[in-house]
Length: 307
Image (spheres, rainbow, N blue to C red):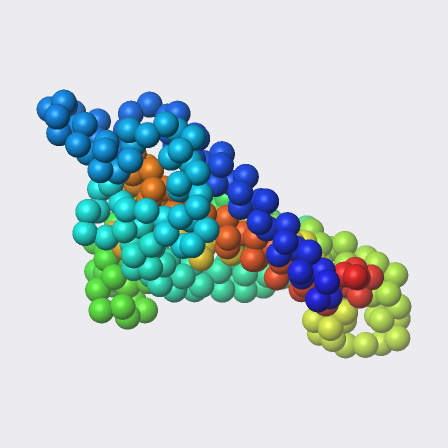
C-alpha cells in the first residue's frame, strides 16, 4: 500500500505540470488582457503596467518564471486585487469554500445513498419512480436556476433564511447555498446507489444470506451495501473536489467570498495569475481525492490489491 501511495504521488507531479502548462497558454492565447478596459489606458500607462507585471517579456520567459515561482507556492500578484497576492486571496477564500463544500458533500452523499437504497428496495414502485424522477430533475436543473428559486421562496417570500452573504458564519447562512450546491450531486449519488444496490441484491451471496434467514436489515446494510457503495466511492473524488473547492455559480449567487467566486471574477477580468492559482488548487484536490478513493476502494473490495 505504501508503494502504491508513493507511485500515485509521483505521478501527480507530471499531471500538475501538464495542467499548469495547458492552463497557462490557454489564458495567454485568449482574447483580451488584464488591462484592456472599455476606455483604453494611455500608452505610457499601459507600458508601465506591462513592465511592472513582466507581461512585456517573451511568453516562454513568462512561463518559466511562473513555473519556478509556483513550485515554491508563489502564484504571483493579482492584477485586479492589488492589495493581495494570489496565495493570500486563496488563503482567504478557501476556508469558506471548504466549509460550504464539506456540508454540501455530506448532504449529497448521505441523502443520495439513502434515497437510492430506498428506491432499490422498492424497485418499480411509486416510491422508486418518484425518487428517480426527482433525481432526474436535480441533475438537469442548473445551479443558477435552483439558487434564485430557493432565495425567492425561503428568503424573500417566507423570510425564513438569509438571502446571501456569510453573515456571522452561523449555519443558517449556509443552508440555501448548501442545498443549491448539493442537489445535482445528490441526484447522481441516488441514481448510482439505486443501480448498484439492485445489482448487489441479485448476487449469489446475497441470495444465500437470505436463504439462511438473516434479517433483511443485516442483509442490506452489512452485505449488499458494501458492494453497492463501490460506484459511489468511485464518483466521490471528482464530486468532493468540485464541492470542496466551491461552486463558482453558487458562491457568486449567494455572495460567498470563496475560491469559486474569485475564479469567476478572475476570468471576467482576465486576471491570469488568480485563475491559474484556482486551477492549480482544483487539480491538487482532484489528485488527492482520487488517491483517497483508490485506498477506500481497496478497503471495500478485498479483490482490489495495491502492491
